[in-house]
Image (tube, rainbow over all chains, first blue to last red; front, top):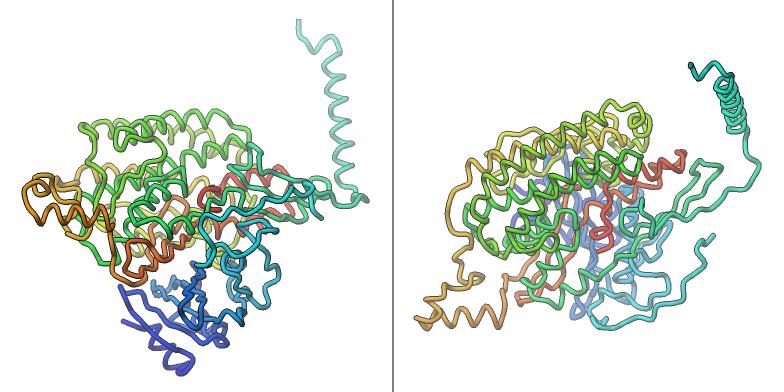
Amino acid sequence: MQLALDRLKENFGPAVLETDNQHGNETAVIAKDKIVEVIRFLRDTEGLEFNFMMDLAGADYPEREERFEVVYHLYSLKIKKRIRLKVRVAENQLVIPTIISLYKAANWFEREAFDMYGIRFEGHPNLKRILTFDEFEGHPLRKDYPVNKRPKIPTPDPLIKV
Amino acid sequence: MDPGDNGILPACRQAGATLRMTIQEDIAKPLDAEPMLVNLGPSHPAMHGTLRVVLELEGETILNAIPEIGYLHRCFEKESEVKNYTQVIPYTDRLNYLSPLMNNVGYCMAVEKMWPLEIPERVQWIRMLICELSRIMDHMVCIGTNAVDIGALTNFWYLFNPREKLTDWVEALCGARLTTTYTRIGGLMRDMPPNSKSFLRECLRDTLKAVKDTTGLLQKNRIFMDRTQGVGAISAEDAISYGFTGPCLRACGVDYDIRKAHPYYFYDDLDWDVPLGRCGDSYDRVLVRFEEMIQSCRMVEQILEKMPEGPIMTDHRDVALPAKHEVYGSIEGIIQQFKIIMHGIKPPAGEIYSYTEAANGELGFYIVSDGSDKPYRIKVRPPCFAIYQAYPELMKGELIADAVAILGGLNIVAGELDR
């Protein structure tokens, strides 16, 4: 059963770049500029209704031309199915549209991907670092960030920042 | 002599009433002061770990709140990329430290799905057992500390006594009370200690008694009801949009429990119900957790009944160390031992998103393998992360004391929130 993937291919044809069904995890690689449309389609179409955004992860593959990947995991309570969507972006144009308008959950998950990989989400209202501190240099989960690098901890700010 | 006779008491009462009236009038008046910023946490006993929120207050009413997380960030995901698959297991203990066994299970299950590996039946039953016991232990901390935050200390002791006993069992099981590292890829570290069944049945009796006692103390307690009913309520649609899972989602009346929706191991064979709330407020969250503890006790009872005997490690040559007599007695055995020890466990290349129902909701592991002995990428989907996002919205318009009452009901664990 590849219900969701088939529907995606039917409706978005060329924007679905690759599909995969390893271990029963339905996966589709989507063109960057179509991602919001695709997710809105998955969320709002009757019979699919992917109403949960469970997870959003970044990933880094330095040997690829399009180095970074944003991985969405959606879940549909209605049909009890999951789908994984991926968007690939090159390092020199690290911007992808935000999906906050579709899922409130996306807010912090996108901030985390920004913090860890430096992927910018266009239209995000508050794209700041979340797990590391504001003065942190670099993006720690990139493969070229040394694992034992110790960043300099800045002197603390005044307790309350307005 | 009646103390009311000397005229002191009525005078005091009168003074008290006048004072209360003035205060009420004061509250009714709009404040002309500017909103005040108050810093709550990160090192505050009510902030459960290291959570920090900056509150914007008008009087005692919360206008806005900005949570800051990351104080307990320990680079779990980065560290995992340079450790081999087995070495990641101890790190998972430190995710949700209230129920470490459950994280061990979630992680090992994800890695096993990459082959996929068949694991022995007994392993699956023991994993279910430790998951349910962890769920009980997790909920005990959540309810106990939530009640303490609201001012009801007794419940904490009532719940922590049986928890202590369960922790003793965990210690007998794997040698550690908190940093368990009990599961292995393809099996378990070792079998359960002898006479576990009778000991656990005793624990269940204690647990059910504690649940009954504390439910009695809280469920119809006027103060508790006033502090939690209608406080921090969220609608089902919003909860879904925020990615709520677990008890917090079920308190809104949404029937989503992975153990029922996508049963793993033998959850299908057990007879139990999913408790649901209605209003999605703090009160319902606590009651759902109470009921889940009772259901988990039911499950543990059945698991102890049905658990078969058998090996506690798979015999798959990729992951299982051979028996000692094979290592010493055959060339294949010694080569297999050498390969696993020196080169590590190597799952086939690919990706997996595996999910289990942890105490707080869906605990997901997204693992990318490039076929080497180290995970290329591990992403944890901690249930708290999605839930804590909604925290500012939940407490807008409430009083500052409610901020603490709501936080306790959400059961945010900084260990898995910050990773």
